Structure formats: C-alpha cells, structure tokens
Length: 422
Ligand code: GLY
Image 1 (cartoon, helix red, strand yellow):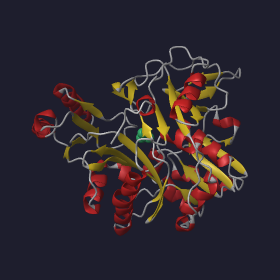
Image 2: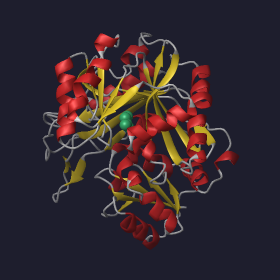
Image 3: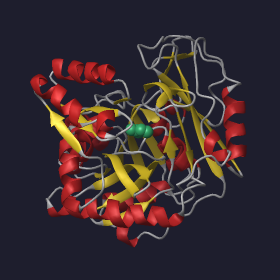
Image 4: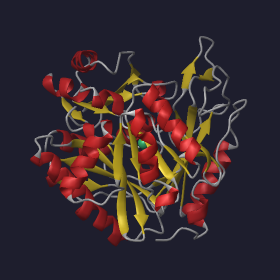
C-alpha cells in the first residue's frame, strides 16, 4: 500500500512512523512535511488546503490511501476531492468536519444526540456581550468564564478566566474581527482526550490520553496548541471509557448519519470527567496534537490497515486493537516567545535521535536543521509505567539544544504521583 499523509506537524510525523511499522505499507509520502518527515517519506510541496492539488498529487504518485492530519483541509472539503478522484481517504467530508469547524453545529448535534456538554450561548452582536457575560461565569456559580471563537483557532481561540475584564476583552476582540463568540459554562474535573476511529456508526476507541494546553507548569499562562500529553490514563476506569463510547461517541456518530453527514475518519472527543460523569468540552474531526504522538507510540495493530478499513467502509470487521504494555509521554519543545510570535531560524542540536518528532523544523541549505514554527519538536518517551515514560522523555528533551526554547516540566506528573482522580 502507498500512503500519502497530509500535514506538517509532529502528529503527522507520528502517523508516518506508525504507518512505517505496518508490513502492508510499502511506501510513504507526505505533503508538505518538515525536516524530520523528509527522512522517512517522499516529500511534496503542495497547497494542502486545495482539494484539487491534493487529489492531483495523490493520483500522480499512485496513492492507495490519503490520510489527512490537520483540521483546516478537512473543513475545506479536501477529503471530498480525494474521494471524488476515486482514492480511499481517511478523513471526514466537509459536511461532517463541521463537528469541529462550527461549534454551534457541534452543540446542535450534541443536543439532538442527548449528549452532556456545557450550556452555551452564541454572541454575534457586541451589544449583547455584557448581558451574556452576566449569564455565564463566576456570578452564576461557575469558576470561570469560558470564551471561544466559534470557528477554527488552532487551540488558541479559547480563554478560560475568572477575570471578567479578560473574558470581555477576548470576546470583544473576536467580535471586532468579525468572529462570532461562544460563551460556555465551565466544566470542572480532569480532562480526557478520547480518539475514536469512526465510519458511520462503527466506532473503535484508541487509548485515552490527556493533554496540557496551558504554556506553563501547573496550568499557568495562556492556552497553546498543546504542550504535552500522556497515555494511557491510570486514573480513568475502563468502565468510564466504555460509558464515553456508548453514551457520547456512538450517539453523536449516529446523529451525524441521521443528518446525512456520516463521519468517516478520526472523531476526537475532548471531555471533562465531572462529578456528574463525562461531559463534552469539544469534538475535533482529526487526530489531536500532541496526544497522537503518545497514543501511537503504544499501538501494535498495523495502522495503515486500520485506517484503510475505515476509509473503505470496512471498520466494523476489524479485530480488537492491540497495544504495547506501559505508558508513553510526549513533551513539546517550543520556540522562544511561543504562543506569541515565535523566534525562528535557530539551529537545533540533537533533533535526529529516536523519539524526537518534528513539527516546526526545516533544513537549511547547509544541511542544518533549524526552527521554523512555535511548537518545534515533540519528544516521546515510553516505559513500563508513567514514571519511567516521563524519565525517558525528560532525559531526551534535556539532551536537545535550541536557544531560547522552553517546555513544561510537569507533563503527566500529577497522574504519576496519584494526584488525579475521578
Ligand atoms: N490537543 C488539542 C488538539 O489537538 O486540538
């Protein structure tokens, strides 16, 4: 099988590494990729937001399967163009990708499916903002205001704050730039990312993971695209995972089928495990980053065959997934000033070791690997348990040199110390 992966982050690097372990996968291609993926796949520079460009490339290189990593091409309908060219594609249609692309569509689907989520209100008129802020946030008994961009914002459109003026400033800024705002009630409890391979009503869950969205240790500072993750979750009972699949993911998948927007691809449920049980924070229409880097490090089932089965409508016949024992931890190495405008162009030393996945990297003409984005590398450690996996990840990240870079020191720490419970 010849597989083309679309995207350029550490998530796509992790997908390529897992695909390479599948004996059915003969050749790998990636577009546009980065300095790390160039070593393991043929690399092509095309506009990945163009369905025509991606379908043309897939046909030209004889791809049997296209796997689309990021949300932007999915929301723009690139998967439809690839399928239209007669090539199997792992990724939802433009219609189904609205589960991530439009928070109001997702809320509507969840309401119809009877799935528990935060209460919410869309504000698209600045004159209605203060009244809406009065109805949400601390005075109403919640611990914080939750203010979201209604569209795609790469994880950085969300502000969760107990400071009303900060909540108001974020919402007003979004409205000023023409973006509707979603205000939500605050969901308390530890967060879980559960990735499910979905085809219509067939749902296959992967290992549950947890990511760390704030830039600083102890969940301080602004939100980012994700600073680290670990899997599996020692504190999450299997029964709760089964409950999430049966009471949340399957009803949402069935509701999408009923609406004629059947989902085929990776449905990512972001949840809070509240005192009243799991509740949805958000759905995404693709693998999460950086959780994928940890989850796929433990997958033994051949990934190419799994994704191909989903893409051709055969998922229901797949055997149960096989996982390596132990834990995996991902720690993100970020450039100076990230999540603000990152410093780029610095030489990275030590980025070619096993377990180092590339995101914001490129190769200079002299052959040096340099930083070219905010999240530069994802460092993956595995071990017999979470403590051993953390030690492996932190030993590796401490061996890498990138001027001005930073990372969180507490990825998976609370869980390893038994301080997370439901
Ligand atoms: N881990 C957050 C995301 O992928 O959106």
